Image 1 (spheres, rainbow, N blue to C red):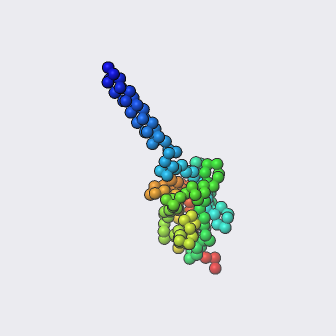
Image 2: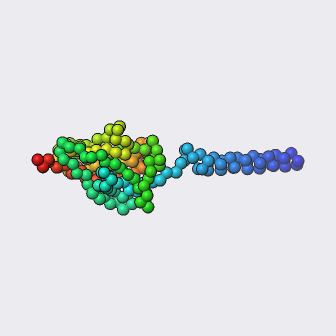
Image 3: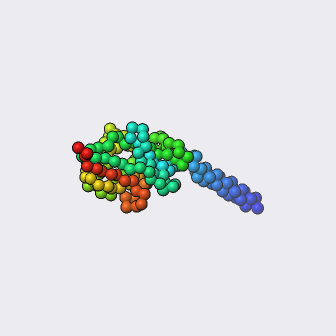
Length: 168
């Protein structure tokens, strides 16, 4: 009887220890590097010289504005800024190195997005190649998958690039 009670007590103690160990490992705060919380963007705004030119809000599925460029020319530097649902800026420290801005243009014969190392990861230019209109989809890429994206190039409400002939 004494041996049986002793084994039962040890099994209870071992079970309790294992439960505490697993509970500690599943605590998200115990391993911040692997499970760090980050702010989810709801809006992307594209600015030229501090003025919002185009914006898209995911929660309301609304796109406002369009990009305009002339054939053979390039826009001034465009900056992408992300905002949360409350309109607060999602800062660069929230979008660590594993995040990047990606894009897809419906008709690359009309316009192209140009980004150089000196521009920075959230800045780019658009070059007009031929007169016409095309659509562009932007994606906030996070280790190979999108955390945020604007409507696809074939969808309603896509972001438009309007390329016009020179007025000279």
